[in-house]
Amino acid sequence: MSIDLYPEIVLSGDRTPDIGPEIEELCDEIRKACKGFGTNEKRLIKAMTRDQDTRTKIALHYESYKGKNLEKLVDKECGGDFGEAMELLAVTPDVAEARLVRKATKGVGTTEKLLYTIICGRSNADIDALRKAYFREYEKDLGSLVKGELGGDLEDFCMACIQGLEDAYDPDLHTEDKAKEDAEAFHEAGEGRWGTDEKSLFKLVVSSPPQHLKEVNRVYTDKNDVTMFKALEKELGGDVEDAVLFALGMKLKPYETVAKLIKSACSGVGTDELLLTSAIIRYQKILPLVQVAHMELFGKSIQDRVKNEVGGDFEDVLVAIVDHALE
Image (cartoon, rainbow, N blue to C red; front, side, top):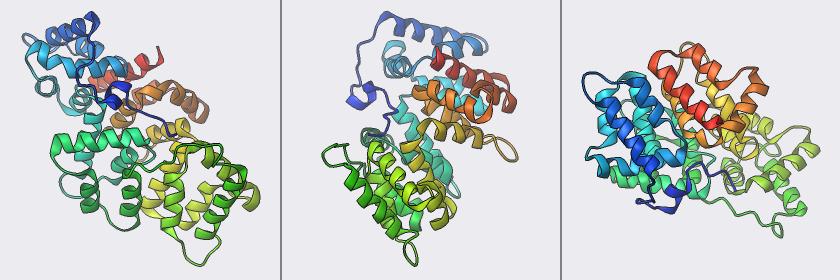
């Protein structure tokens, strides 16, 4: 199955997990960092950039323990890109992604890259939790939102991803013969026909479990001297090409794909601060392996990339998230 990015607390739906003394101590630290004249940003960052499980428990417990909403407190105390990052840390990971989806679709135009990197290439469990969180926060179905914001092939692909229809891997079903059959079907839907059968391509990418899709890609490459990635680049274009390649990458090369996403947020004229923030916070659970891929691909650490792109408290919080993930 695809990687679960959410912690078990979120996937289980447990809104009242067991809270140990460490969580209340961190809640106390957060309150002290915000008390009095001015905010002690370094103290606040240190308390709020813990591992995913700890952050989730803080987000769930803070209001009942301290009598104040943590997200609103952080919004009041922190501003700019730094404030946006801290607000995402102040809520549970599923709610943070619901907030990001909202940001990607709010106002004039849609930020397609931010949107598809959140909803494509996800595990069934993650996408189910995200749909529930979005409805809980905004009383709107995530699928209805996507239909209203996107169109054409990109809408079709993202809607397929939102359904959470990835098959469970079954060695009795996902055999060598099945891989050959699916590789041929992929060829017939793309390079092997006049015009492209996008829906068939989308279905294969979305529904195939990673273990099987890796074998399909091997068979396809051996037979056609081109990978599924290269074939999709020939058959698709624009945002839908990027979205499908991202989803395929998250199944076949997830750590390399996230490393490239982090780099892409820093490429071109200026930095896409929200995309960079999103990538580092959302993928905290797998950052140790993303760091390895980032070093192999680009010869530098994620922290060094962040330091080259941003500064101040914003730099400090992103670097702290990575540092804690690598501990």
